[in-house]
Image 1: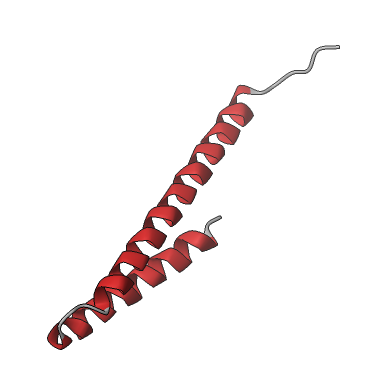
Image 2: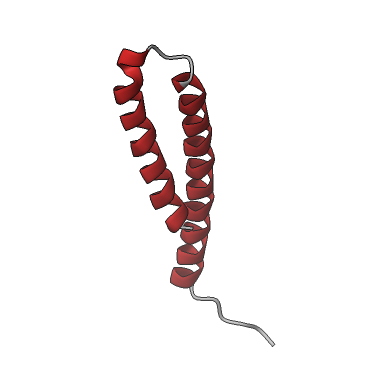
Length: 70
């Protein structure tokens, strides 16, 4: 017995799968960037701490948002 597969549904499923793959990649990149910035903070001069802490906070917020999309 043959099954009818609607083209629209198949396209939507493929698009959702690609979006999930891209989000996973984005989460991975954001996580690596956050770790790098945290490591650099410990070696940064004191006058840069505020700016670097702000970047770290923004990266962590982006990571939290992207993780929420999974």
